[in-house]
Length: 253
Length: 274
Image (cartoon, one colour):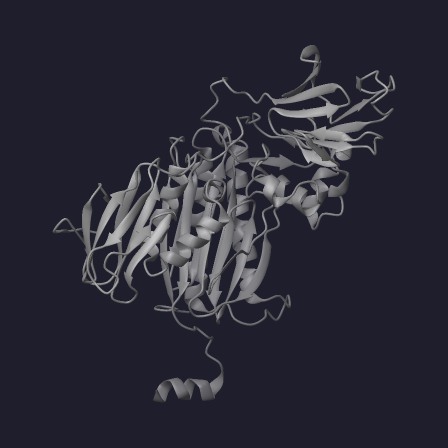
């Protein structure tokens, strides 16, 4: 479950768990998070939580809402976002079940069922007011209280790993009309050769660079040895012979 | 009906880097112009059972039916297109099989599966899908998603709660709003699309599109289009390089030539004399 940490001048004042679908922030006492300061409007902002996602919305406050230094109207909260209201700071911590050892389970596809209101989490009707005009029958699923079947899968934000090897690399042509030219291998895929005659591709992967035969009767030759259909890992200063052109692969320093 | 030589199909499926089971299931028949992909869910091996039942029921039943006749024209009784009716009926059959198995066997309780099916005939295809397994099209250098997920995230995008860019950061990625085998009756979304020679269609489970951006998928299809098998393997490998958190399955279909339905006597004579 996500939470907010309220602080002023670096002093932590309190922690608020986002258990409700709407958590209101403002100066007046009926707010879920009351901040008694004249820079804060009576009804300043609201955080709408839909299952694992939370959205912050400014309610037309006098002095505005700032997230990570940027004034916002509406913002999709990400882990460690800092919300500023006057002198007060609210830190958003998406405390998914990190460390619960549920790695194998997380991101499992699950069905969101209509009507099955046994353990209604956050996603009830008001949470997604705009969802009602959504197309087709599926929209109805949200009119009712939604429940998740199975155990809730939670996990740290699923940012894909950077699919880039540490080193940059390039090819230098050693023969042919463009001899001497350099070709940086910046794309995840770089094709070489003549379409219809012989084509190979160099793929940039976290493990390094690989050359693979794509089409044509003859296979590329690396350091004098013809390749088979498998991908071949390239080493510094390998010489590739492809469609009659020689080229050298090297890592840039 | 026989489309032999009109379509080239390559596929690849992999459990990914984290899961021990592969709950995805794929099947294809190039001569019948049929491709099926399902992504199962449910505890233990129930997900595999559900997706396996879906692909098996749909491909074997349709193979038999298509043996007799092509999916052309409009059904006289219902006024519905024959292809739509064929798909709808077989999807209903698969749904019933999975639902009943889930009801009768405690170890299968709650199992279900997403589904995407494409049936190629008469220079077009009919696509049916349920859940978040997708179909994309590469035509020329334009790569676009054809199906729209039945998922919480897609509904949030449609209703403007969240932008497609933000959706990639969402924690609610894995919630589908429709699946096969969960309820006694399920409605598949069915649409027709015209095909052109040279088109490449990609069917994939969410294990691909969650791990690899659409741009990168499009780039792979364009650069490796001359070798579909390699392209399929490359896509799976990229998903695994990026973390491979889910099972990854891809089916690629390339339209090699036109495959118009035979029409009338004159046409038959023409093909005779050719």
